[in-house]
Amino acid sequence: MLPLINSLHLADRPGLRSITMSIEWQLYSRWNGNQVSTTGYSEPLISCDGTSCLNEGVCQNIAGKLRCFCPEPFHGQFCQLTSEDSSFEWAATEIVLLFIIGFLVACAVGMICCR
Image (cartoon, rainbow, N blue to C red; front, top):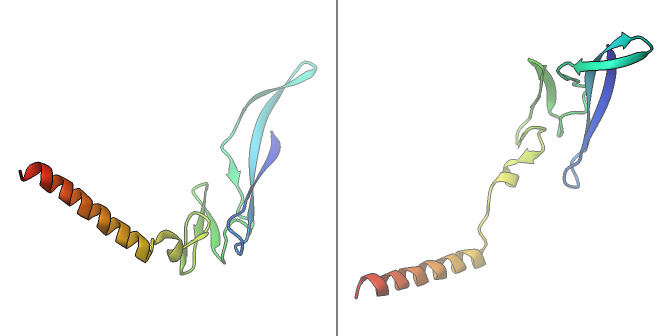
């Protein structure tokens, strides 16, 4: 078996750390006369080397899969999100436009249906 290392580098918005995750593959090969032929590879061995999780998240390898346990208020696959990232705040302009569109639709339906 020959180990191969592949690296994946992830970066998020400014202010958050970037991470590099190394995945080790075991490559099976056999000697065939004067050459080596590759016959396949095993499942990846994912390494938790302490650099996988962002924002003080703790990395654990559970059943061969990488898992980050995130402190509050962070969440996401690599603890890269906060509750502010997933919430949507309406601006006053958006609320007014939504009201106007709703009013115009109601008027159009009223004119068509209530003749």
